[in-house]
Image 1 (cartoon, rainbow, N blue to C red):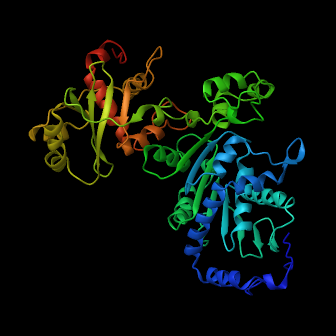
Image 2: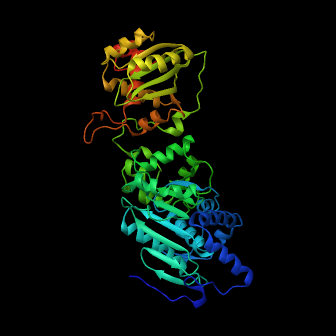
Image 3: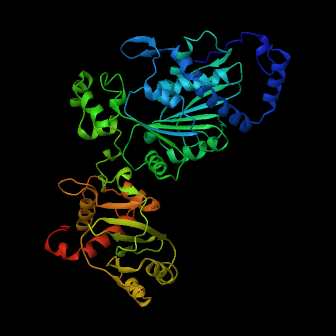
Length: 488
């Protein structure tokens, strides 16, 4: 139901100039002449300055929220809420456990921005209509404890319009959400679970380029979604997001004795002794718990390489002339033709130091212009290929590239990769990928089995992983002949 109220002062409504001293009236007139983009940049700068002074934390500390079991209580900010509120980052991505107060933080920051900075537009985008309405109602509950708000011109489940021309809108995800709104601040809530996520992100991302702020928040939902890609790419430095991880043990509600401990394992150990953990943990399967509370992206049982973790297996690895260099090759034309440059250390750790993805180019062309220069530059000793391409291997050999291919099963290659990602018996990983190999990293994260089967889904996110397994089953061919790939 829409509630439209008359402004508290007729002089503060509509397009008229508020009743202000002459100096402030001139500033107001200048503000009204700014474009939406100029207002967004000015508002973002003002928000950062207010956050640095601590105004936003002080303001929210005087508000009251509705606790699910304790009713209306003071908004006592958790440490991670304070860190988010005082962050200067224009783009933030937050992976979180369930029910840790992030929605309260979103609502509070939006209200502070709308109250204190005239003419801004704040946009919430949620996965469905009930979730969108829930966020908007959180704003209204905070407003109930603030007697000094600007005039309220419109208030309903989708929109709040204040007399200072600031607006807070809350929308469900649709194919066109975000395309018609220029916003100062955008919050994408539960983005991993959001339909049309890629289209929505494309629509709202320019707000940050115009000087506004973009915040993406979600619990994990496996790796085959836009949220994981943004998280992964921000960790690799290809996205400008500040990353925040809020584990269940960080929450004072869940871990009252240990939430301030710095070490995650110690913090978890103390939390596991608490009443909340002992009551809640038995209600979830391992996969459910990993996804909902451990901030674990590997919760999708369909992933082939659940062991792969970009934080663990990806880094900066330069070419080492003291180590032998090889290549793994998956042939393609419309699908990409992929060659990976790989080095093996004296302790037989595998380092992928380069990738070459090309479409719509013949192998003979790639051999002359791409692969042969790579062979000369890195002294490649073996070029291990997809054995189903004998004619392509012949073209590589005619160009002077040492191409060979040995037949093996997909399962043998997958097992070889897994043993390097997580060696049997523990120990540090033996597979390392340079962060510049962005397409291989993305495919390792999303390579999946077919629904309801143990068969790998071919022709989908598999070209780099295929090139990697062709290298492994050829390089350790003798071990493969003895058993299904037993690496030294």
